[in-house]
Image (cartoon, rainbow, N blue to C red; front, side):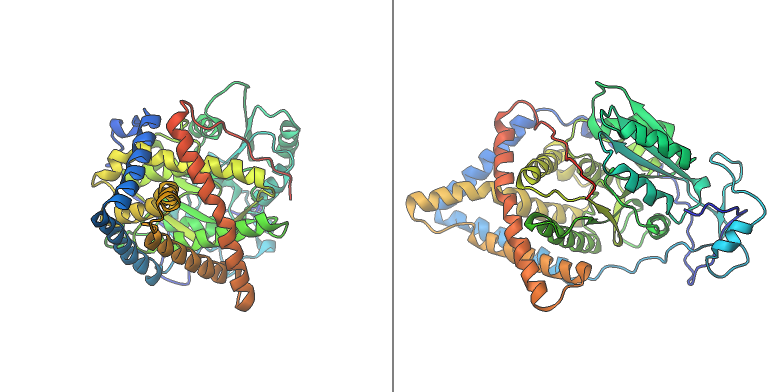
Length: 494
């Protein structure tokens, strides 16, 4: 963020790309039956688990039924080959914000300009090559985050974006630590920081906090940052141009952008090293899924969403454990795409113990599975299109169905001596995960040689935690009437 006195900005791009305000999405909507389909999750979870277990048992008892595995493996081979083969499209150049009459950013020129920037709500917006500069609202949900909030607020003051078009909203969700004092002190140093205090007893968690503040904001683009985030200075100048792209053939309008996540404490122990590998592979897979016109996903921290799209999707779902994954489905079903950027990365604090990882991943697993149970009518309809539907099914098979099926398959092998009916699928998924870890660590972390192979192996061992997490989660969702109790991830400012 540049705080000098400047009248206007111009965009002097090195190509013909020009950021322009996207056309309104008048036809964007989600039907009422889709927004209210979260009922009877326990019954639906039980039916899915019973179907999977019954199918595995049938394949063990009827030899011809094993051809079903061959069919799934063939489907996965075709999808994986396409996933790893296609190259991502070229990205638009970043916004270049210069004071008038200069060819590069000149802090001295910015400080000595004659007139002040207009305040938020000024009559005349700044201009980029004749197009309005979008107003961005940054939402920061915070509950007992005194250890990390100062770091985030400092990074937000370094954003390369005029403060006249930047709203900072910190949402104090009934904190009982020093969070309120930190925010009060920060307001003295950051004039455009606004604090919204939620009283105790308000429901909805993070989603509820975001929904309460959204109507108070004026930004055309909403950026959500977790309290433990560190925001790179060029985050907005690199992401905003994606919203102004004209959709290519077969593509939809960009409704949201997710940036890669990285760790502020990568070398603490095995668990943080594993999370580094996991984030690298996730970034690579996200990039490739978008390249094949599949499902780009939001990751909560570092997500930017168009306001008009968000409002027409009903905001954040307060009945979901993972607001980002739930919103991902709503956006795609509503008819927009989610773009993904590997650079820049938003930094956050990784968990450092097995217990914290278990609670966090059980929440992720249940929230991720909930969205399939909630939005299955839309998934089975034609709202997503063929490419996204295929990508979604491949992802669901590898991440959710195979862990469910592993239990009955293992029991049949132990009790009868049969060979595993899932071996081809498991081997295929393990091979693709290995490739994703290898390519992700090579691309994102810049690793080479033995260190690359060592960190790939470490990542694969680390990811074995997903099997017990998914098995326990899917079983519990079949028998417990209530969803998993949310356990807050404690941040220490590492």
